[in-house]
Every structure is written in C-alpha cells, then in structure tokens.
Figure 1 (cartoon, rainbow, N blue to C red):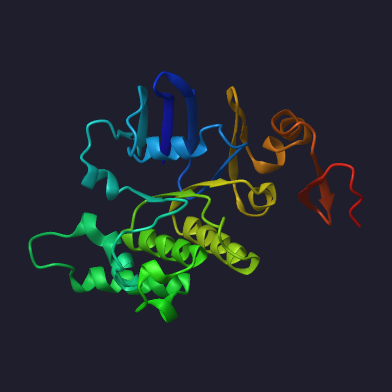
Figure 2: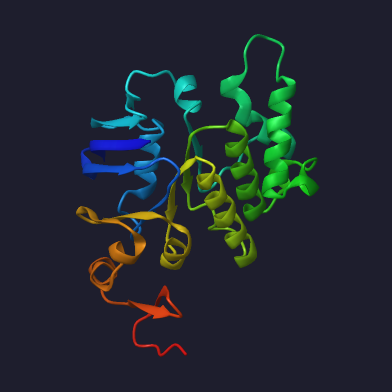
Length: 257
C-alpha cells in the first residue's frame, strides 16, 4: 500500500533523513519509533508531500506521488499533525467537515454525503458533545481528537498520525489506539509516530525504528524492539519483559511484580 524508496531530506544542508526505505502493507498499523531528533515528524511530512524531499520516491499502490497535485494526494493520504492552532474560531463540526475538502466539486458546497461522513467521524471519535463549540476554545487533547475526526472524514486509504495520543489522558489514549486498530482491520493503512514502546507492543503490526544513523530496525514489534535495539537507541535505560504472554517495556533495574 505504502512504499518509501531511498528518501533523502535535509534542512539547509543538514541531513535529517538519508537512504530511508520501507514498506507498509495494506490494512497494517505501523509505528514510527525512536528518540527525539531522528526525523520521525519530518518523514511523515515528506510522505504527505508537505515537505519536498531531495530525492527518492513515495508510492501508494505503486503510484508515485511525485507530480501529483495536492488534491490528488489528499484523496489518498490524511495527515494528523501533533499540534494545530487555527487563527479563526471555527466550530468543531466545521473543522471536521473541512476533511471533505478534497472531495468537493462545483460551487455548491458540501453534499449530503460529505455532511454524513463528517457526522459519522464525529460520532466514531466521540466528540459529538463538543461539536458546536469553537475549536480554539478546546484543550490540546480535545483538539487532537477533533483532528483525528477530520482525518477520518477525509476518507483516505492511508492515515499518517504524528503522536496522536500525546495530549490525551490514559483512557483516551487507549480509545484512540483501538479506533486506529479497528480502521486498519477495515482496510485503512496507518503510519503513526509514537514515543511509547508499550503502545507499539500492544497495538501495532509493525514498527520502523529510527536512530541517529537512519533505520535501525524494521519488523514486528516483538523482534524490532528486542533489548538490543532499545539499548542501542536509549543507552540501556529499559528492558523488554514478558508478563502472561504479553511483552512490555519496563525501566531497567526495576523489579516489576
């Protein structure tokens, strides 16, 4: 579904991404994992063509995004940023409806199907109770939920999510991961930045681990986050242990009972 080939990107001559290549199969939930500064957010923006990479290719179903118009890409890929603060106090339901922009045609505004898609996304994410509130008056966690609803309303084959649960309480973190997992079961492909290795273990089918030298591991969470990999990128601060058949990452040197 999603293929990245030999991607390179840098800021003002400073290399951030070099020789990045990987694939994410259709209907899989894949994590981008690694320390700060390794280019996870930059990589997502390159895939979404929000940044112009120096060289390489990004393909969706074997079609190269190079040369595609922004509206064409927006029908294939939805991007959820880590933080978003709009200058105008749009209502939540209006922000979610904006996700339908790539599909609008003519001069008559949103169709009934556009409105229905927005309502379904609002209900799925559970923000119906704040649908008539100004987006600018929401907390950071509430805004994150609304952005995810907007991405769902966009109706794309691929979701790119930059730390979608970073501002959420634990209950909503698990809720959002379960929603993303359910979407992938229905055929959506998701690539998600996260800093929580246990979220990767619990929910993801695959993980791309980025280090200072590029991709250091690529595969199933159980194998890619094995102790050696975590020690390499985090200097031995954590261990992978098994509890009742489930693997978890715990702080090194702490006995967990």
